[in-house]
Image (cartoon, rainbow, N blue to C red):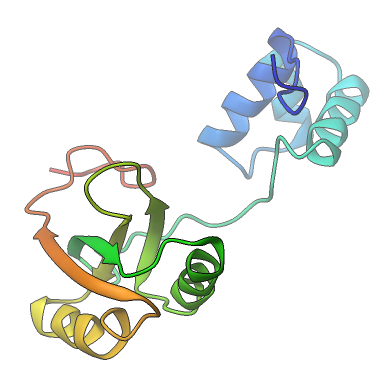
Length: 158
């Protein structure tokens, strides 16, 4: 077992599950839901935050209601996959807000990007002006999502 994996009991898991579903739940309600009193619940919550099990709290926005319902997945092949090249690519990707996710992949390509824009025209602009100019790009292939079947944060993905 890796040393960075936390050992969690049923109360810790219950806290994490409850907060993942409702990050705005009060301490009193959280304590009630997990079956502990308020003080031990607060102490456990603080411990989980300090250990990094809880990285933060934020609002989950609905991209569709915000007019960002065009999702494309982009396979990226690099010309260089040495550590310096990967670091340069990673840093550049971080500066492009339309890229929601970027994953280094073990496979026939190097990265898989999830790009969210308002429409195909906007996506083409992001691809031409930002993604294609990233460091060490050899080629890209785009796959447009037709429907989100399961996506965290979107409860109604019909």
